[in-house]
Length: 65
Image 1 (cartoon, one colour):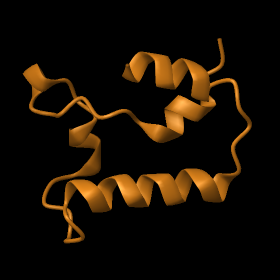
Image 2 (cartoon, rainbow, N blue to C red; image 1 turned 90 degrees about the horizontal axis):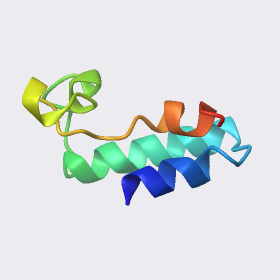
Image 3 (cartoon, rainbow, N blue to C red; image 1 turned 90 degrees about the vertical axis):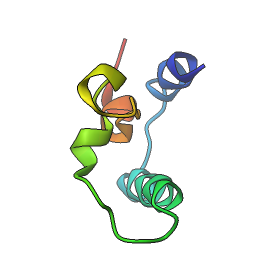
């Protein structure tokens, strides 16, 4: 499912403010509106490396097929 989303997202030109807002809302959801407890880059790591496999929104919209 996530792969399909990133494929679709790479086809759009998204305003910079939209990406920032999306990232803010995603992290707000994960941390339940509290301060981050680990580095955000750690969340992008695979499960076997201690992350949660979260999609990097910046890269998702910048990737072009």
